[in-house]
Amino acid sequence: MLISGRGSNMIAIANNIRSGALPGVEIAIVISNTASACGLAVCRELGLPSAVFLSKGRPRAEHDADVIACLRQHNVDLVILAGYMRLLSPEFIAAFPNRILNIHPSLLPAFPGLDAQQQAFDYGVKVTGCTVHFVDEHLDHGVIIVQRAIPVLDTDDAKTLSARILKEEHEAYSEAIARVASGDYEIQGRRYIKRN
Ligand code: GRF
Image 1 (cartoon, rainbow, N blue to C red):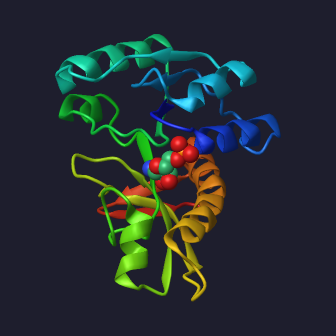
Image 2 (cartoon, rainbow, N blue to C red; image 1 turned 180 degrees about the vertical axis):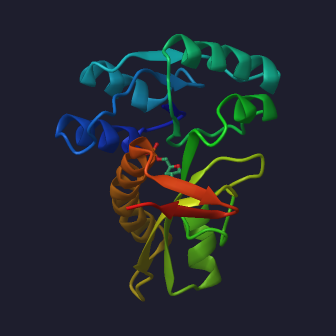
C-alpha cells in the first residue's frame, strides 16, 4: 500500500482485514514517499510494516525503482494507492500490469486530478462519488472496478461533501480489493466484468 498523507483509506482497509471482511488479503508493506505522512504513525499503532522512500528532488524512475524493489522483496500481488500523491513512472506501471489500484474522489471520467471534490462542487453537479480503478499510464484513467454515487445536497459545502465521499471511499476500496483478490473477473477493453 502506498500513501503520502493521513491514510484513512489504509486504516479502513486494515480494519476490514482484521474483521475478516477481506479473506486472503493482507497488507505486506506500507510505503510512504514523505516522512511526515500521518499514516506512518498509524502503521506503528496498528503494527503494520512500513517503509519510507523520500521522493522529493529525486528523478521519478530512480525513486520508483526503489519502491518496486521493496514491493518485490515483500512479494506483493497488488499495489494499493491510498492517497499516494505522486505519479507513477511507466516502468512502475509496467512492473505490475493491472495489479495497481487507485481510488479517486469523483465519478470518473468527471473531475480527474487534484481537488476532485472541490471541482465537482464548483461545477454544480447534483451527483458525485468515488471511483476505484486500475492504474494505467494516464492520470485517473484506467479500467473502473467500483463506483459509488452520492447526491450533492443544497446544504453541502466542499468540506461536508468531501467527508461524505470519504465515507463511501472507505467501503468502496475494500469492495474493489475483494473483487480483484478473488480473481473472478475479466477485463474486456475498458470494461471490468465480474464473472459471478
Ligand atoms: C482520498 O480522498 C482519495 O480518494 C484520494 O486521496 C485521498 C486520500 O485520503 N486519492 P487518505 O490518505 O486515504 O485519508
